[in-house]
Amino acid sequence: MKEYSKSKLNRVKRGQNRATYDIEKINTILDAGFIGYVSYVYQGGAITLPMAYGRKDNKIYLHGSQANRMLLALLEAKEMSMTVMHLDALVLARSGLHHSVNYRSATLFGSVKKITNPEEKDAALFCFMEHMMKGRWDGIRTMHQEELDRTMVVEMTIETASAKIRDVGVADEPEDYNLDFWAGLVPIKQIALPPISDENLKEGIEIPQHVTNYYNQNK
Image (cartoon, rainbow, N blue to C red; front, top):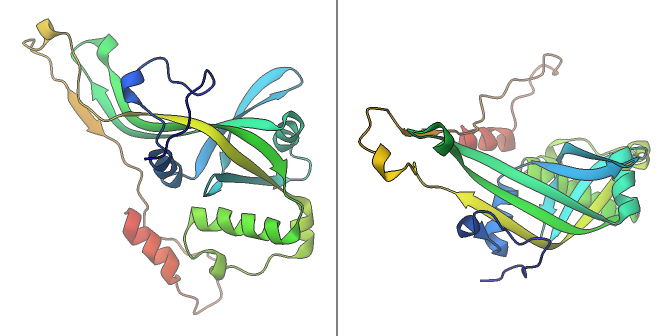
């Protein structure tokens, strides 16, 4: 089992019993999502924004316009942090202060660089699309050069990370278990609904197999 080394930067202080530094478990959390929360500093102020991402090995890929202030700020700082979180259940206890949630979250820390090599840029965008939906890259037209020129691609190398996972039930005070109040879990799940074809599709174009596969795997 390979783990990220622990340091003041990534060590989980609160709820250490729920912490993991296992690289495979953290990658599983990243691969189960598509949106991460990226933090950066702009004109002296802290900002956090949701961003779609792709992952390959220890690399995270983000993209936006060449004038994207977040990406430019990250490149200037040469480092970044990103969090991915999945809400799995509401934990409803007998006491208000014991209410909680079940979740999986991973926080990444690493260095940042701009990808300028055309082949590397193409590979990064392929990774991004395939992370969103496997097989999608072959189901779209080739990108125009002017589109690629307008697009900035940033690569984060994950240098360290940590995760927290809560997957247990209610934890009430011992004296509260005999009270006449309901307690338990309300599981939360993100699902895919049936695909809806664009109203401007040419006649005869059917939903491609990779889209159907995604729906069947996530419904």
